[in-house]
Length: 388
Image (cartoon, rainbow, N blue to C red; front, side, top):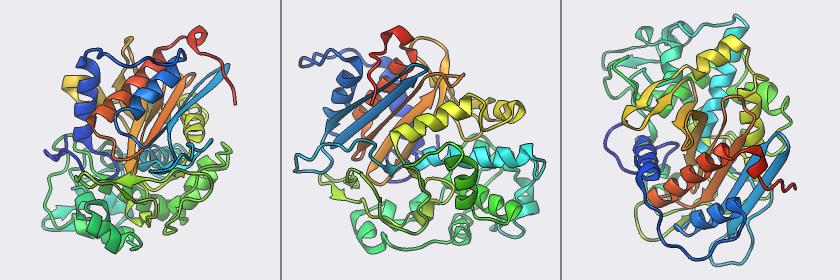
């Protein structure tokens, strides 16, 4: 995937996706302590046992909505994980951004074949880089070759950097400029980069004359009544019920990283949401309520991303193999202290979202992928049918 970096405190780490999917597909069943009879609760507790501070999962089907919780809302406390808790969804934000772009395409206001230079003159420049050689499609598909700006953000990469710059505000232009310090080759293959979606957010602003945040709110959040979902901008706090997020930055000691000005992740990873809202979003998207058939087909037409594992990528959506055969569409997300996996069956009828507080190492990732895959494979009669 994108380089050899094993872990980075960013929005989505492709090598983590690779190792996690591989582990989920090859791991043997280990001996474990007795588990609850409910399979969702059993899987949530298995995730918690990997070292996560708190875990929440929600699964929906046409006639049921099931939830399970494990762990605590804060270290060294007995405070339970909050019901309808809010968390930073990280790169799951990209699916929202791609949806807005594809809505604008469907309205005839722009094209996937438009170049970055057409909409953002002189932005992708320097070191021989040329925005006229990059299309909007390549941004959404991660085939632009543009480097990821994530490693350049101190707050995402070390405890000292976080303490010093957690409230720093970045402009999109500043972030893209940081990525332009490197020369790159457009269209050379699939290479995950958050910078692609920062540029996509800038294009949305240019096309509509309104901010990315406003367009996401008016086109997705408000119509779907996603009451726990916000685009916080430079506001550094998670409002409403939430668990604390923790990051260890490669050490053995996690620190509280809940407060963060997420302006470095506009368009690529800054949304705050809930498991329930994400399930509603995935169901509406795959169910055809947000995009016309032509645009949904564009989004779900995928190319190899991890060909050795069968993982593919479309426009803001990953296509991930199911253990029962076939595949589902979804996205991993991570932004300092919160990690999520979620997605939906191809028709949007069944959805599953799980998030953890903590760094989300390989064992945690494996357990999260296992939960989503098994729950999306579960037939309607196998769901417990518990409701809130």
